[in-house]
Length: 210
Ligand SMILES: [Ca+2]
Image 1 (cartoon, rainbow, N blue to C red):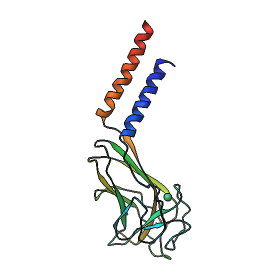
Image 2 (image 1 turned 135 degrees about the horizontal axis):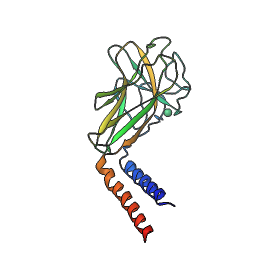
Image 3 (image 1 turned 180 degrees about the horizontal axis):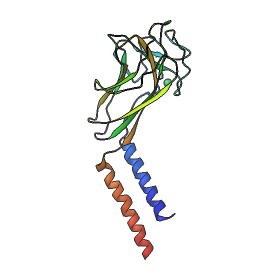
Image 4 (image 1 turned 60 degrees about the horizontal axis):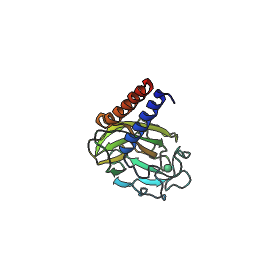
C-alpha cells in the first residue's frame, strides 16, 4: 500500500468515526405501524389534530389519487389541512451534537382525500422546536412520490422535529422514509483526527528515508 493510500484510508476511518459519533437517533423513520385514522407509528407523537397511519393497500380514507408504495415501502403518515388548522406529528431527538450539521430527508406525495375534497396543491413544512425551518416544493394531487431534504445545524442536544402542511385550501398529503444523517461535523471535532492522519503520513515518509 502506498503512503498516500494509507493516508486516505486513515482519513476515511477518522471521518467515519467522527460522523458516527455525532449521529442522532431518529426512531422509525419508515413510519411502520398499524394503519388507522388519528394514529401515528411507534416512536412518533401527534402534535396537532389527527394525522393518520396509512398505506396504499389499507387506508382509513379514499384517496383522490391512489399512490403506489413510497420508495421506502410499507405504511406512511397522511396529513390534512384546511384554511384554519393543520395536522402535525413528530418526535423529540435528544442526542444531537451541538454544532453538527444534519440532513433531514423524506418522501412526500399529494394524494388528495375523501372523494374529491382536500384536492388542493400543498407542501410539507418541517418545524424544529415549533419554528418552520423548511418549506418543501408545492405538489399537485398526482399521487407521485418526491424526495425532499434540507440541512440544519443543531443548537442544542435536544430538538423536537415536526412535519405538517401549511394552512390553505383543503389538502391531504403523505410522508414516508424520513431519515436524519450527519452532513458536517464541527471543525474542532475533526481537527485531532486530521492531525493524527497527517502525523501518520509524516511517520511513513520518515520511515522511507531511513
Ligand atoms: Ca414506510
